[in-house]
Length: 181
Image (cartoon, rainbow, N blue to C red; front, side):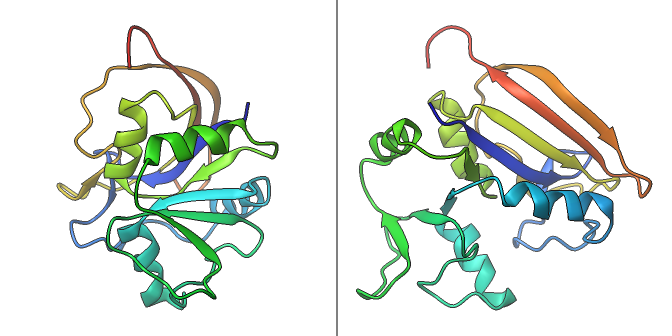
């Protein structure tokens, strides 16, 4: 079965962005960024919420197009709509069933892109299999939390820890669910 991998930059105080969705302060250049781009090549499918997808518009993404050309896109939103020529799939119902079906299909691991609330929703339902954190040497004070409002307790098994010269630390964990989802 394919794994869902939440591969995300985070501050020391557990935020993936400022409250307005901006990421000012994260280190965008360096060996950690090069390694991230290489990891993206391993995924063939991406999951993201509407806010994460629409965040790309300010960075050149065209509505209905893929943010990552080599990946099948599934955007989870009750309000987002595109015409028949869209390159992305909008999931507006049966979210858990869709995610479970994607995990059962043949392919590589699935990239969970951004979106603390959506990541928290999937974590709450036992569907995040691995977390790859690019821990940035900065404190935001407030913003969008790594797992949104999730209060699910899970254990993590450290698979990799890699410090970079610029202060970013890569941490890769398997998620270990105990009890019921």
